[in-house]
Image 1 (cartoon, rainbow, N blue to C red):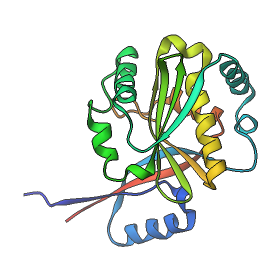
Image 2: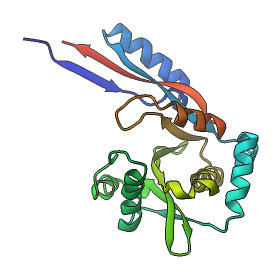
Image 3: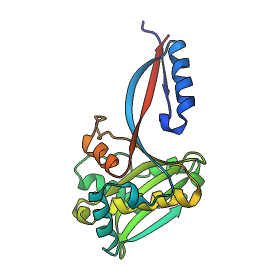
Image 4: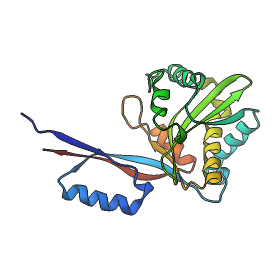
Length: 214
């Protein structure tokens, strides 16, 4: 019979580089091996505005989006059913499998509702895009899930949401906006998503999963 496998999923190295290095050496010394090493993107929060850290093409798209009249709203706590349904509808509109089952988002959030914020971009009563973020520490805001309807791509509603998230970090003294790893619904690297994260100021760091067999 095969041995038992112990898996350790670590935070991205950007959360605390020195601790990451110490833990990495400790895991290797204890017999763990890196099973997966992902490229994680994050935006360091500085005193610059979001439009100063993104590339010129994204800056033009952001300005266009801001001139479109969309309203950006931020709500703390558990995501409402309307926004959750919109995120599921976005998955279907993009022709991909649901990333999370209906009702699952609220269930996850109930554990620590005070750590979550929901950002939405609306045109009148219609939600065009939404994003869920988790305040994982007093330094880090993590991008958990987001979506937009493809027919509104030209006005860049998602870019407006990241602008609002960056400003939230500035206003609340957070130092890192963690954009996460870039995988498709099958778990494969999604290069177009990684490219977008780089264009909006994302820097790269490793996120490692370790395994040991006993």
